[in-house]
Image (cartoon, rainbow, N blue to C red):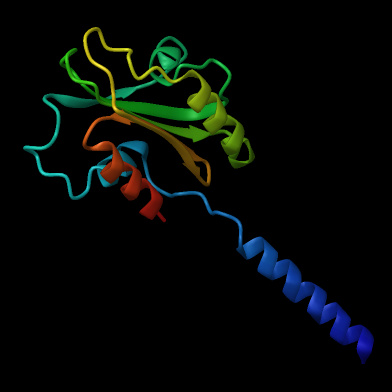
Length: 151
């Protein structure tokens, strides 16, 4: 009887531990990006914000790294060069690389990448297989909060 109780206890512990890990966020990157802007009025948004699909040629310009192994990525940026606003959303090949990707972004992000302006706030964080780099001014805390609420 004790063996059965120990066995059931071990199974329960395993199930509990596997349930504690962060799950991957479902949905397309453009849909997730839309969620990051939830609660932000159109008047608050920078002018002409568009999503840009990232690839081998432009990834380093937006994510400041060539060392992140990703499946797909997009950047949401103002198309006016005088606005310091960039949100880069990256879906990693493997969620176990998230911490390393965040460190890479934090180390290399350049909040002065724009000609005459700089972003006051820079956040890099992960959730499951998603990593985000937020560089903006007043909008950054709200976008960060929206990312933290993703499920």
